[in-house]
Structure formats: C-alpha cells, structure tokens
Length: 122
Image (tube, rainbow, N blue to C red; front, top):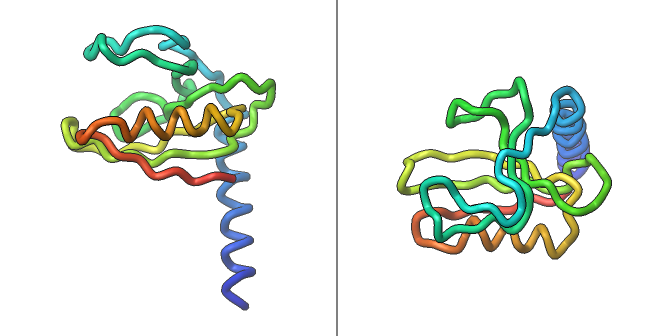
C-alpha cells in the first residue's frame, strides 16, 4: 500500500474516532467564555472551555474541549499541549471553531514559556 493512502486512511479513522467520542458524551462547559482561570486569575478564557462527560484524560478529568461559535458539533482541530509547570501533556478538542477561534486557542496555549501546543487541523 502506498504511504499517501495509509496517511489518508489513518487520518480519516482518527477523525471518525474523535467524532464518536464527541457524539457519545455530553459537553460540559465549566469555564465559560470571559471567565477567569481558577488558579491564574490573570488568564481569561476567550472561548467556552470544558470537557466531555464520561471520558478520561491525562489529568484524571474528562477530555478537554474548546467550544467555538459555529453550530457544528464536529471537532475541526485538536491541540496537543505540554505543560512544564504541571509536567504533563494533554490533547484538547476544538469543536465548532472558526479559523479565528482556532488561532485564539493556539495563541492561548503558546502564550507563556510554561505551556506549548501544536495544532492539528482536520
């Protein structure tokens, strides 16, 4: 099998698995747009931020999501983060985000020397 077909099939399977996760649980927004970070009050959430109920992530909570302004429940990007202070890494789903909102999330996770993120778009 040629490598381009492998990548195409893997990518499609990956996004379908993400879609299954998103559709299988309720999205809980526990940090609405405009709210402050609970431990770092100088950080304001520019988009709704939450998690998918009944899922698990590296930090022991649910899989994190950024919820954009589009009506779609499709994950159109993910951001993989490394947090030097917490000494962990996570994957966060971007659901229904415009291109501008995707940029805002990317900037949010790359704004300090303590956290860095890499963006993967659908």
